[in-house]
Image (tube, rainbow, N blue to C red; front, side, top):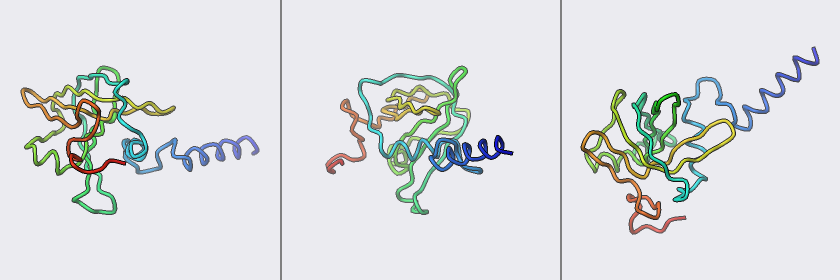
Length: 148
């Protein structure tokens, strides 16, 4: 009984700390929360090529104007969460993504103990290129605004 109680306590602690997504939570939800506190690191930039598995628009408290676009991309043996940026920026650039699209993404990888994700700087689909960040890693949609 003590063993079972210990295992239940460990799982509960991991869920409460956010290390394991809660039941019914999308696989990118933990990455979305972590990305809010993580910055684009020019020293950790890499390029991946793969297939879009899923496109998700995450809107805080159902505020569609503020929705962010995240992807699940399969690259070889890895599935990685990719944080793109505001859905409105993609729409302004006439750039859309769908499951099955082949993409090449350059971005900064953020590694956590149980998950890693990529903050995208640029996405290429076919001959279309979507710039998301400048050479310093600042979001292009935030031009003229003071960044925190």
